[in-house]
Length: 216
Image 1: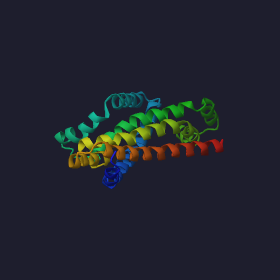
Image 2 (image 1 turned 135 degrees about the horizontal axis):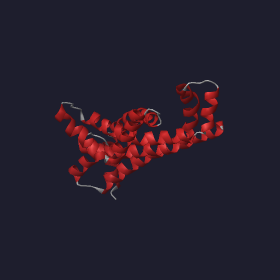
Image 3 (image 1 turned 135 degrees about the vertical axis):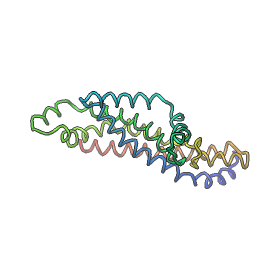
Image 4 (image 1 turned 90 degrees about the horizontal axis):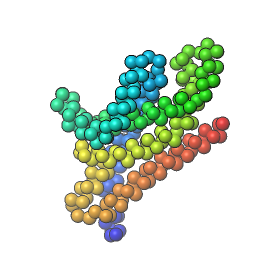
């Protein structure tokens, strides 16, 4: 291990950290909103909505993320929808994330005791009001571990955006390879940065879980 190369590589790779975080943040936000919609549709009594949500989950959990990225970047322009590499990556990552977050959200909702819904019905609350005020707040505590696990996976999967030319950390690491033919040191730096980022997410999960335990 050449520590001089490690020191030289860090600022070069760190330049891509903002792009990695942006990919992660946009994809997590869009994937969570879409995942919530899919989860609610899957739990809906309306069969077309439930079927659509089931199809969505089946499709985007079954297709490899790399194929989604390639489709967003290479195939969509063939039908007139041209996206920049960044937004093509966000689209693919968001759809992939939504399919997994939908299951995390759905599992949290169905884990809430059915008596809560019955009590809300007895009080004359509407279905949407019950969901917003009673069910979802209680289900968040249950959702936190799988939600954070999916978010951590998403953060690591942003590295695949290098294959559609997004200049995030992995692509910058590859450029270092081509310049100095040093492999071990840049990969070590990249791994340590990812490890630090995922550690922040894990600590955040522990803080949220502790806060919910204090409330209960």
